[in-house]
Structures are given as C-alpha cells and as structure tokens.
Amino acid sequence: MAEAAEMIPSISLTNEVLSLDRQSEEWKAMTGKVRGACEAYGVFMLDYENIPLELQQILFKTTAEMFDLPMETKLQYKKPSPKDGGYALSNPYMPLNESIGVYGEEEVRAFEKLMWPQGNPQFCEVINSMTAKVHELNLLLLRMIFESFGIEEYYKEKALDENIICNLRSMKYRLPKENEDPLGFATHVDKSIITILCQNSVHGLEVLSKEGKWIKINIPEGALVVFAGDVLQAWTNGRVEAVQHRVVMSGDKERFSCGFFFVPKYGVSVEIPPQLVDEEHPLRYRSFVYSDYVAKCLTSTRLDALESFAGI
Ligand SMILES: O=C(O)CCC(=O)C(=O)O
Ligand SMILES: [Fe+2]
View 1: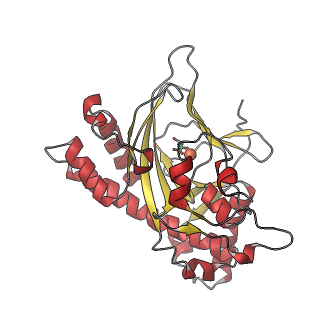
View 2: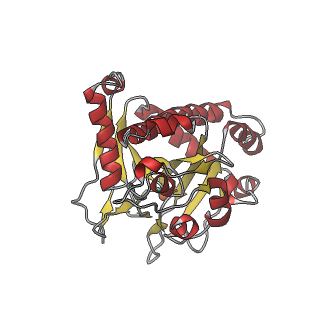
View 3: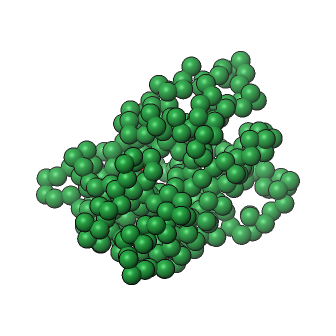
C-alpha cells in the first residue's frame, strides 16, 4: 500500500525567480534546491509559470482526440522499434495502458498527416508549443543541476544544449475491470536524463522512497513532475539516483499523461565528469553512447539496466 502522508519536494519557478541574476545568491540557492531534491528523492513537483494550466488543458483535449481515433488508424503509426516512438497497444504486461510516442517536429507533422489526412493544424501547434516550452525548462533544470555540482564548464564543453533532444510520449490508462489488477504502469526507472510529466486531473502516480515506501503523488492542477532518469544518475556518478515509479489506477475516470523524455541525441556519449570522481565517490560508470544503451536495453524491464550496461 502506498503511504499518502509522505510528500516529495515542491519547487516553484515563478517569473520573479526566473528573472534573478544568475550570479546572485538567490539563484544559487534555487539551483541548490533543485539539486537537493534530485539527490534526496530523484523526483520533485514543479510549479512553472511559463507553462500555464490552459496550455495543459488544450494538450489533454488534443491527446484524448488522438486516442479516440479508430484502432486501425492508430495502428498505422506502429514503428519497427519503440526507440523511434510510435503507437503502442496495451499488452498483457500493462493491459490498462496504451501510448503514442511522437519524437521530433518532423514526426509531429508526419503523424498529423497519417492520423488526420484532412489536416489538423491545431494538433501540431499544441504539441510543438508545449514541447518547445518543456524543452526550454529541461535545459534550464539540467543546467541548474550541473551548476550546483560545480560542473557548468563540463556542460558548456560538451555543448549539452545542442546535444539533447526532447521526446514526447502520451499515455492513456483505461479503468480496470472488476477484479482486474489496477496497475497502470509497472515499476521502472526512466532511461532518460530528466523526464517532465504532466497529467489530466486523475492521480495514480507513485514513487518509491529511499526507505522503500511507495509514495502517492497528488499533482496539483497545472503543476509538473520532474524525474531524474538513469542517464542523470550516470552523469552525476551516482550522486543523483533515478527514482523507481509506477502508476496505480483508482477512482472512476480514465487517466491521461504526457511524458517529455529528455535524452542525448543519437551518437552522443555520456562521460562521467572527472570533478565528480574522488576517493569518497569512486567512478561508478564507464563512458557510454546513449543510443547504444537504448538499442540494447530500451525494452528491458530490469531495474538495474544501467548498472548492467555501464556499471563498473
Ligand atoms: O503516466 C504516468 O504518470 C507515468 C508514466 C511513466 O512513468 C513513463 O512513461 O515513464
Ligand atoms: Fe516513467
């Protein structure tokens, strides 16, 4: 049973905070807060003024329309490999969940043409506008974490702004039938650097605390959830640990969520910054190319996929 009382940290990036001088003590305190939440929990809730509630509401209206398309239409968007996104039907492992991954602006247009041959320009507009805002936020958070660890030079040297992309996967969870297991998404860690998640107003997300307790996440309307993925775990030499999470359905409403997975571009290697390796923190991971990791481990349900692929 998940514990309802325990809370994960909540951070607010208001326009006032965003306009702080990046050299100021207040800004440094904010970067410390983001890093601290990642280190202590691997997840936090975020209030971010640049992504208003209305945009999320339009996003979920669009998402519902997309899932309402006839099955044969959705099946046209099946991809040979899940690493390229595509439509994923529910399966015996996760019978309540179906999802559609549309990765990249070009794909958004291709997907629109395939799903709505008569056109649906609002679809592209909403998805691209939301993705652009989340991408900007992702970069900001990653930069804050790197700055707080004192490795902003590494961030610049590796040109991470240019070497990272944002992949969108939308999910729909149907209600379980009587006596059916309410598990919507099985326990996993994300194979991303950071994942930013938003949901319609239906809760169900749970994260595993370091003490081994499941914590229910009741996301306030309009807020976002930020997860550290296992690539951030490698990049910080294990200072940040990817958090295990799952979805458990309850209540009487379908759940929709959109996950924005922030990952290194094809061929980009993850090299552990030497500044984060010392006697107290020996090197935990070898350098690896993210696309090789994904090619080998994306569909693995092992919780220790990163350790087995790149652990020392
Ligand atoms: O639907 C959710 O809230 C979580 C989905 C998730 O964890 C994922 O897609 O990696
Ligand atoms: Fe996840």
